[in-house]
Image (cartoon, protein in one colour):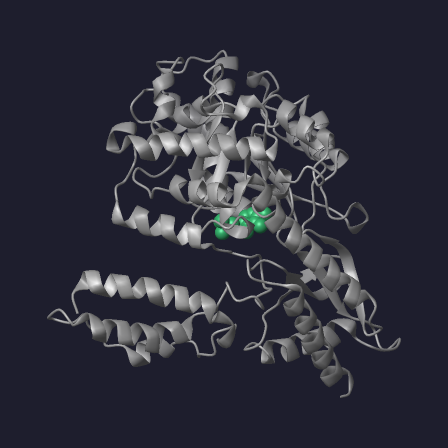
Length: 503
Ligand SMILES: *Cc1c(COP(=O)(O)O)cnc(C)c1O
């Protein structure tokens, strides 16, 4: 078969895959190491026929795939997909080019800023965050993941703080690099015990001290202003070294809008208040999963938007989680793109020139860690055009309704309890204690084993909720999930419960 013919056939197969996905087991049933037993240890010396490659793909790779687009996939957070996104990724692959600056392919850069602005407006971000509004330097970039966004922002925040400290200090800076390295040991970055590990990992990679601040069940695990204030006071007093005029602080705090574990929301308003007295503190919101809900007028308060728009430095959200756009797609907005460019552009010596040319902001390479990258904007453009703002909202609302329907059914069943108020597509629940002697964590570990045994039919992932214990998370996320699938999930979970409780 010629390869163009094979490509045509593959498109048919992709469509068939989506239309028949429910016939597949949700989770892969293979053992770790299965593939090395099946595939040769060396690449073939001579090229092979496509038919044989395709055959092995179906035979050996598809068996090792867990189907995240299956309507009964309820684990982790979704990584949902759309035909529009597939088509965009196919075109993007076909046009492969690294898009690092405007010249590399003008449409890649220009479409990115346009769709970033579309989405910023959908989220209710103020014009300060629009890339094509030239009255300021705010704007965005589509990064590959929340991990990359957090690292990128941490780099920019570190650089901004060190620059500010340098300007404030009266020392001579004959050797600015050494000075910056020595000052870096004073920096500390904050998250909470519920913040995603991307934050501590970014700090680890940058060699910056990281503190996970305490959050509590009574606050729904959201970070409070008083906790931040206490940490700021402690760290400021610990780090006080006289020659620096008392400002040896602290650069960066990751607030979360919808933590991964429980969808907790840090108190963005209180944190902003406290941060007023720490001008070096960069306020970033990691809204990887929850950020898309800012597109729902009924789900976001004006106060939330005002707080963010007036006080926060940056936000990132993953369209590749709940937003129908294939991986990798994390729109990331900053109040001042020069903070990114000063830390990430090699075309200017930032120590010499404080004023960069605004054109620097129009080359993607100056706003990101990597040089070349995919044409990410295309899939956002296809999805937003095909769904429209209203269709995109309806997609989210449908999942929220389904999650509520699931929670309601679980709540009505005596063997279960809801352990945290449902939020968006997430419901956290577990089996109730059967009697006073019951070890409820142990019971729920067995419940989880029973659920995992049904992995061909559905998939859920468990977690541990602080001050509560081991429990299950059900996240509605696949684009194709319907009420019937939710009802079926309840039925299976009841069967699992019965099996465990009858022992
Ligand atoms: C999923 C998630 C991440 C990690 O996302 P990646 O894009 O896979 O790096 C980070 N933070 C939060 C709050 C998340 O939900």
